[in-house]
Length: 112
Length: 117
Image 1 (cartoon, helix red, strand yellow):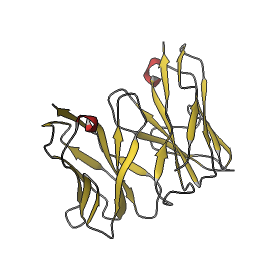
Image 2: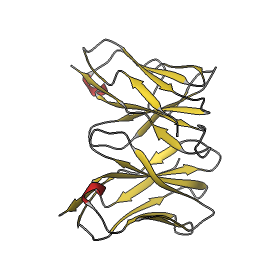
Image 3: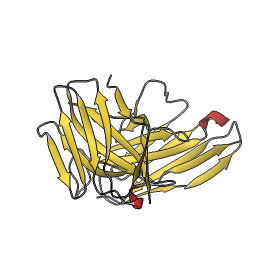
Image 4: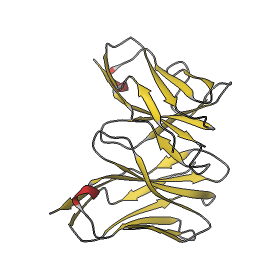
């Protein structure tokens, strides 16, 4: 089955700096890669996703890149703000299925 | 995206008892899923709730322990049976295929925080 690895497990940045979180996946048939943000005590919320037919997608300060050859994808947050502090999860879905396999999560802390 | 609610939001239960968690969606959805999130951990899929048929369970989860119902396209229940302290966790339902969203996008309910004493 699919295996998703996520790094780093914790990330601390200064406000205004950029943050990058990286994930690798094992199943070359995976074709959908969402990112979720989970604040303490809240539900995971979808912040951006990318499908295997594109290499990059951007939404304001958030972008995701996908390298199908290397089987890795990354979340980029620019101009970080304190409200970006949360746990971020990447996930991957194998082609033909509905199951999402999640990474282990990254605790992002944006310091003033 | 769909509005998803779960009941109860939290509960404290005695070992050996069972708890049924409800997930209600405000619109018809194609797929419904149940996840477990242990404290400080990632999300683990328990099963896919299939409308009108038996749920599809992931490795390590069995129907006798986590019976699931899905009587229609907007509602599902997960029961945690014969509970032990190891079942203390957050249980989340998620849905896919709701109106207003991409067909393969999953949205999560608010979760049920279960503590077993």
